[in-house]
Each structure stands twice: as C-alpha cells, then as structure tokens.
Image 1 (cartoon, rainbow, N blue to C red):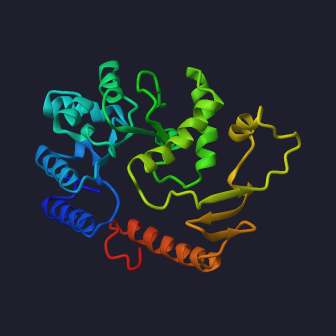
Image 2 (spheres, helix red, strand yellow):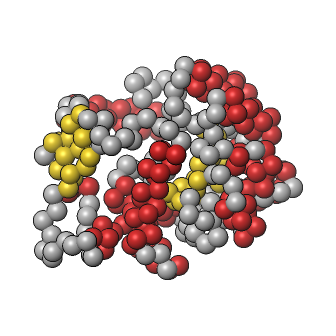
Length: 276
C-alpha cells in the first residue's frame, strides 16, 4: 500500500516493492491508501506504474468525510475529481473502495468511468463512518470486506439488510456478489476459471427452490454451510475442513503472534515483530 504517512523512505520502499512485483509478472493492482495520505508526487508515480504495467489502481475513496475536507483544503477539489484528473479512473482494473461521502457529480464521474466500486458495509459500520449508498454509481459495484474478515456470504447478508433503506433487493445483492467474478474475468485474472466449485450443505427448514433461492441466499445461507471447495481443480476444503494447511497449527501460531503484537503495542511500537 502506497502512502506518504510513514515518510519518504517508506514511500520509496513501497514503490520499489510494487514495481518489482508487477515487473516479475505478478497479477494485481497498484495500491494507494487514501487521498489524504497520498501527495501529488506519489499519486503521479502510482498512476505511471499502473500505466506501465497495465495494472490499474485500488484506493480508499471518501471512507470518512474528513477525506473530502482535507482534499478540498490541500488541493481545492473533491476526492473523485482529484483522482479523475490524475488518471486513476482511466483503467478497467481500478477499484474504488467505500465511496461513502461523495456528491452527485462525483457519482456521475464514477458511473461514466471504467472503475469498479467496492462496497464494504461491515467495515463502515465498525468504523462508524457512514452507510454506502449506490444511487447514481451504475452497475459496476462489488461486495467486499476491507479486510475485516473474509466471509463473503456474511458480507452479502449484511449488505442486503442495510441496503433495504434504499430499496436494494436480494437479486441486486447477488448481482454485486457475482460482479466480483465479472471483474476478474473482464480483466483476465487467473484463478477464477470454470474448474472452481463451492458445495453447500444447507439443511433448510423450508424448501429451497429457484423462486426463493435469493431470499435464502441473503437470509439463511452462511459460511458454516460450506461443505467442500474445489479451487483450480484441486479439492482444498472437504467436510468443512481445510486440507491445504493444518488448521490447529495455524490458529496456534496466530494466537502466539497476537500476544506478541499486543505486547509491542502496549510498549508503544509494533516494530520488530518476527513472523508477523
């Protein structure tokens, strides 16, 4: 993630890491934090890398109203206008996360651009920064979690419940859920082919039919119903258990690292945590 908030040396190291990864053929995007931590020089360099490697960018956009306040103070324009002028929205791969505090003109710019928007409902609720509104943004909206967790079924259910205030239907939430795959296919990311399959074991008290599936999807189907997962033709989850790693070892290691992190934070620094 590229940012100016940790100083010039950290910024340069992040730029070099990003370019080395893309140069090696790694698939991904040029990652920016947010407008209020990204100066014009870094923004230009990030867009240059995206152009050079046909990578696109991902960036947090107006997650909090303060992002707009600082952007207007420092650059005399709103966040979307700043990013649009810099070329961030010119790429098919660009992802704009959040987009909570944007006005109607910004929504029109996003709708007429190539960029995709990612809705992160639970993260927004957790940070108490506002609720996503999809009006005027068009159809290129995907569901996400902002790294809060990785349970997309849960994200879909919560996004539906919150979205009912603006008339969002189960069908629309399912479309945003599937839009993730359209984004990956459109931009030729590997790993999202036809040899992927998730098998659900849902012992529903009511019959699941083609007519009511979407209601079951947003109200009743959860990650605990995942029976098996096939990824790129390989069985990686069976009977609800991950086959590629030892779950107990991973959890044990995670708890140990958690204690080390808490200790470092209590001491006032998170530097030097081996293995984190």
